Length: 321
Image (cartoon, rainbow, N blue to C red; front, top):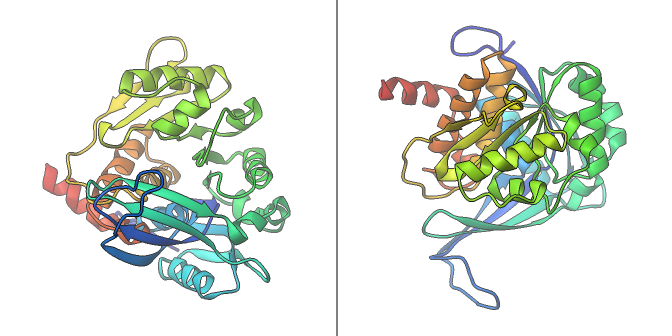
């Protein structure tokens, strides 16, 4: 049984989501519309929001199970092998006989910002029927985490199953282009969008911690329980159920670091937050733990290659005291 650095039994996190091979190009800046730009380097890196969050949760102390779908190709085999190296239960990852493994084309500029285009491939064939097949992995989890890179009905089926069994449900609504129906918001205990996603979900432009609070309040009015909006280098805004009566909310400032690549920073935050939550750590600690992990990840290149391990966060905290 996996244990934390403190010798305690690790919490259990189940991830339902995407597995992609990231095709990463580094360039001096992001290309403009219609422009051909010379890149500096190219590399294949394991990714996908589901895979990234599973790896983050596992490296940061959780016992993790992954439910997803890959193609019968080298990319798929490499992705599953990578998950297993991090101790992740991959018995819920099926191989599609016809569709290729999903891919993401990522351009990263000199400031560490990125632009991403995703082709779903086998991720699009992860059906709600698979949630019934792997129901035990959801029922036995302390925390279920989902994103929106697999079919909507699959995500909703997973969340409803987890809630039926009293599990904590975390929804990272990415990608998203507009508001979610009330039933979606009510099915998640924690809704974790970034500023762009929060703007699309709420209709409130998010440009600062103050506007993030307004967006979070609007999302609560629409049915969300606890809302955590990640703002990159501006930190995180948290509005809990207990904050409904007043302005409330809390703004968590991030550590100051020199970012070289923000790819998977949000996924690292989600994975770290869920690992801490599954280990029964208080919400305040879980948010700060996720922030510390994300801050370290942006100082490294790539998606899963940038995700830190639990002992690195422990050392980082010790050094800051």
